[in-house]
Length: 193
Image 1: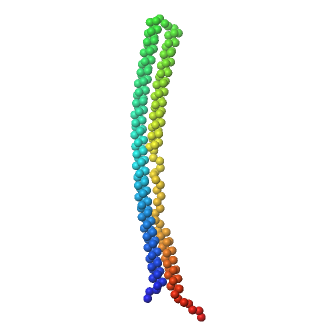
Image 2: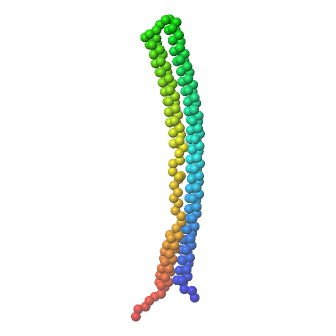
C-alpha cells in the first residue's frame, strides 16, 4: 500500500519542479526577444550613424571645393585689381606729363590712387577671408554632426537566473511536503491514557 503522504509529496515536488522549469523557459524566451530587439536597435543606430557620417563627409567635400573656388576667384579679383591700379597710375603719370604738372600735385594724385588701390585690395581680401571663414565654420559644423557619440543603445539584458528557479522549486517542495505531512497526520487520532 502506498503512503498517501509520500504520493502527495512526490506530486507536489513534481509540480513545483515543473513550475520552476516553466518559469525558467519563459525567462529564456523573454531574454531572447530582448536580445533580438537590442540587436535591431543597435543595427538601426549604426545605420543612422553611418548615414550621418556620409552626409557630413559629402558636405565637407563640397565645402572643400567651394573653398578652392573662393581662393581661385579671389586670386583673379586681386590680379584684376592690381592690373587696373597699375593702368590708372600709368595713365595719371602720362596725363601729368602731358599737362606739365609736377611736384606736390603729382605726388598727391599718385598717393590718392595708391590709397584707393589699398582700400580695394583690402576689401577683396576681406571678402575672401570672410567667405573662407564661413566655409570653414560650415565644415566644422558638418564634421560635428557626422561624429558618432556613444556606442549605441543601452545593452543591459538580464538573463534567466537558475538560482531563482531552484529557490522557488525548493520552497514549493517544502510547502508541498509540509502540506502532505500535515494532511496525513490529521486523519490519525491520538489517545491519551
